[in-house]
Amino acid sequence: MAYMLQAAQLGKTVTTAAGDLTILKDINLSVAKGESLAITGASGSGKSTLLGLLAGLDVPTTGRVELAGINLGELDEEGRARVRAEHVGFVFQSFQLLPGLTALENVMLPLELVGDAKARQRASEYLERVGLAARLGHYPPQLSGGEQQRVAIARAFACEPDILFADEPTGNLDSSTGHTINDLLFGLNEEAGTTLVLITHEERLANRCARQLQLAGGELMIASAEAIA
Image (cartoon, rainbow, N blue to C red; front, side, top):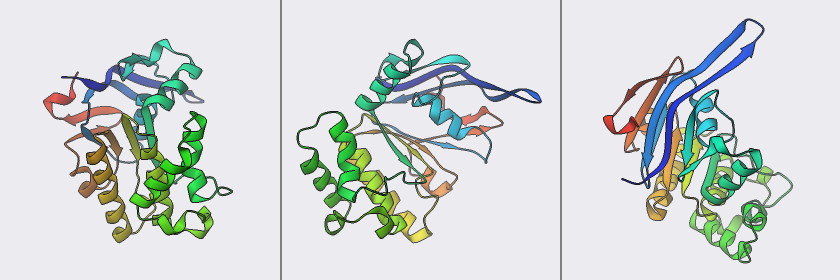
């Protein structure tokens, strides 16, 4: 089986005024190419920290992460940034759109950063696919929360990532809008064959993934046998 993501004996410890604090301990998991995995757990269980380590946004205290066959631990920040630019897309709870750029410009930006000569065309196509063809020239403050998250999803998929990390993608949306965004996220994911790693506290959303992993107190508590490397 070809794996897009693997982590072995992954741990994260930080130093506080009260002493060392272990956030994650001995996490082992593998995610196959094209698979969808939900990471669940209570607030403070280490979900977002784990996502940051898996995506190369942070470095572990112990263990290793391999993304697209690349050992992130052998790279400096610049090298990890290159890996993210080539292989990774993100969708966050807070949308993280630039308010001074239009919807079209927000989607174009990462494409332009990698020198895509068809950035405008591709950005327009993905915004149309998420139902925002009439909102290309609108700025984020002029868009509803659901529309802003659609822009964020278009931005993520327009780069055609091998793996998409989604951190509470519907956390700031009402139930109806959140359901629409979920349908859109999984629809594009299935269409593109992208590997999906999703952090959520929503059981309904987690159940749409092929597998689930639960964290409690920084440790892996529940996972199917295939999740263990």
